[in-house]
View 1 (cartoon, helix red, strand yellow):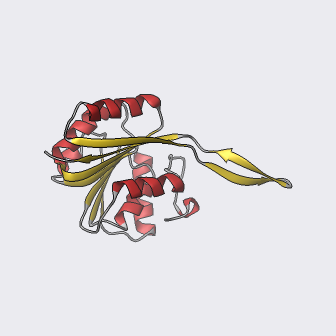
View 2: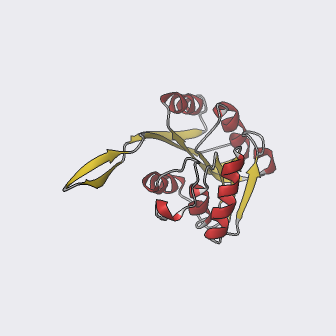
Length: 187
């Protein structure tokens, strides 16, 4: 996994390394996969996924973030990324098949995004959502519970990084994240 400091960031939020590790593990990416990263931000998850997959679509609505994704794609020399500059769920219609979907941001359109992904996610496809709010996690879980085709799990992760403060070490908390993951067992 890539250290956080290696990414070109600007002022766009970025999924931290520890959360990327868990997200990529839960997505169970393979070399033949086509993946989508919705709300791609700086592209940190896009880049990590591109190093494992055949093709990755980075869907992002923020112009500054799109520029950062382009710069990070160039920096890490991944040529299997296609950037879609749209507000999701628009833009998902450009993708025929999805083996793995990662949702990091939804702009308040989570249900619509999930409905669009569901139409394209193959049997055995994986869905991973990184939710920073209880409401987003609840919406995702409600959506999954209403569909028998999905098996799902959820965890809440709190990462603390140890930092030196003077002569002592102190735990500095990162924002807690709910990670919801699911597998589509049938169409």
